[in-house]
Image (cartoon, rainbow, N blue to C red; front, side, top):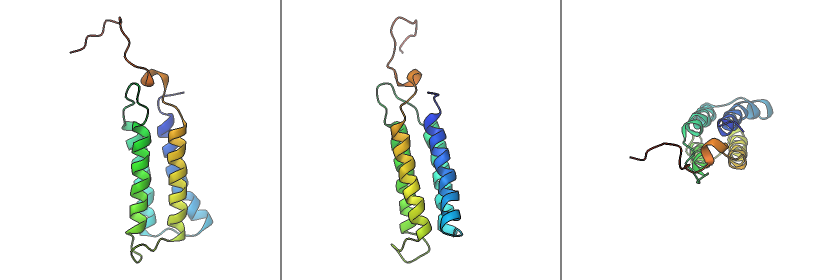
Length: 124
């Protein structure tokens, strides 16, 4: 798998967070647009998060943080506190599915393997 698979999955989820509620429920309000921006920034964060050797949860945690932020935006939106619109529920569901997909795909072998010995690399 390419090293950018998880970022591509998160970016695809960002597109779905923008398009799916728009097509199924109706027009997006300000807080729904903020959610689209949050998930799009989450794609950059997932892409930029390093795959640490022998620990595969860095990109998953970045995606979880994006989903939690989407939930916080939905709760503290321009509606009454805690009143979540149908578009936001769809966005939260898509963001959660996107996070599950990011966790499902494995890290690339080049970044998931531990350090190799005997390759002439010095540790400072």
